[in-house]
Length: 291
Image (cartoon, rainbow, N blue to C red; front, side, top):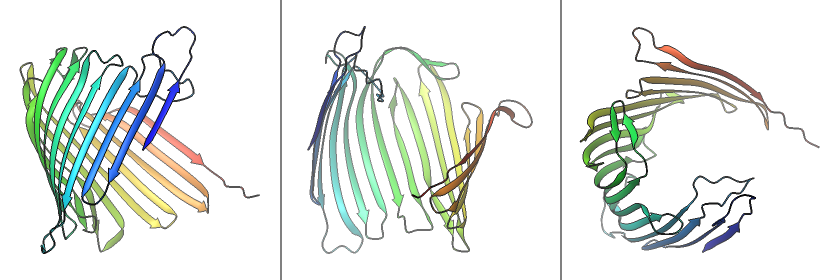
């Protein structure tokens, strides 16, 4: 069990200026239970702290039941999980987000894992927002249902990661998505790792239709135990953006490091070579002094 209570006092701010949290976790191999109560007041302002969101109250509860088939050479563990998440404003007068979720997971003896999930959600949009070029979702409350299936390849495999597909309702329309994110390595190149990620979304709304594609790839090379070279390339088709970066980390002596980072962002909407939108170069050196 964990809990806290905090209060701030800021000149000029009147009203609820406190925050508290209480959480209970019970986890065994067969049973699991978690419950949480969290509140952040509208005028809770820790001037030397960090608060991602104010003026909300959240209640969360989740239960799990698991079994391990004794005589199965294929299945290691079966788990059923159900949970609810309920978010309102701090006065508990307006429901802002609500989710009920059920999940069934199969863990296999080879380290792979498969899951089936269904969720029922509610989201309140305080203001209209542009979700895609020419597509604006009006303010209001929206109910949605999503069904998702996924398969996780074990970390011991040369090619591992998570493959998923989902479909359901979305802002009074529908959305279908498929994706993969994982890690690839080759036995003949032991110091090279590739981490690709692909997300494809097809959205049909009463206010318009659009497809959203996001592709990213990270390259990691470790020439020596103290040196690492990584590069990240990201492409967003909907935003017509291409970003890339290269990062070198070298621990030239134990505890002392050199970092060199180059990155740029490009606009793929223009013809020919993508135009440069931003570019940066950073150099950082640290030195450990022992006394």
